[in-house]
Length: 83
Length: 375
Image (cartoon, rainbow over all chains, first blue to last red; front, side, top):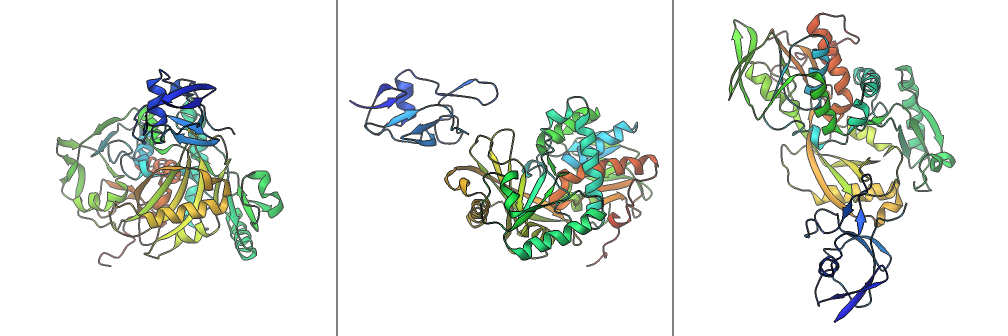
């Protein structure tokens, strides 16, 4: 099975699966926190609307994990983009 | 008294009227802030006004908003930010135009500080490096408009009835004595028309003409970002657009961050009636103009857009005060794109009018019967 690397850890995915779906399938449900309350966020709407599931993929920040197809060897980080 | 309209102007009227001792009911056919208020950026600007009655109203309102924000918890609740506005020009002619306008604005009580090109990045580090200069206006501020309307209504203690449509006026002879609604009649000593872009329809129910028409505007919203933009920043052309009578698409970027982290990019102006169709042409222009000011926005995602309808009158002034053609009816509408900013002074002046107190500002330029009956 193909895999990408999420914060140093390999995550398997099916062909065509989104990064968000693969993370959730691997039991990773949260990868960033809210700006004020510090509350955990991951997939919410799952269809590209809510912008809760943002990830950095291969150094490109603020991508919606639910909309980005996972590719072999991707490096994925959670958290928000830096100031 | 009954206030028709639960936008920010109706809310401010409710707040100041209740403070003056009146018993207030607000009737709103949709939701609080469901019309133009909810489609605004929350601008409290003195910088974009040319000298005249609207600038005088804006200066008064700026002071009233600062007082409101100082009340217990209200400033934080409405996300009041006295951040100041920075107007930038691309050319030397633009800089000269800003300087000329500032001279006149200062005479009206506006604080305006010239910012040479070399000092612009001290105000806004991410601003494009090739601008010719700018003007800083410390009095410009911002609120979250929906929160502002809701919290002013709550603080007023007024009875707020949403989902109730006014269908007619109650009369006693020529006098307006209340409103007829789809949920029954409401008697009142005074009726305030704060229906914004729909104020002309409410006036018509009382048999009077107030010519208010919609001027559509789009706002583009970016993804939430770390603090990138400190002030309200806009291009000098914005002032000309605001005062323009052109019907076609006009836009000039007004860019500001919000406490939520999103950046709001306004503001387009079109006269297309109440058409809500998304205009990619308008959004593209807004994006291009914002990137011109802040190149760093070029690789930021826009996550949504919304539009609303500014209520404008032929002379671009609001309608504020009692209507001599229909005793018992007062108006507080037609604030075009400045309703959030002008709301506080409007509510304050209307309460003075209702209680017979001497007004802080002459209402004559805003009188409801100033328009020709058959234009």
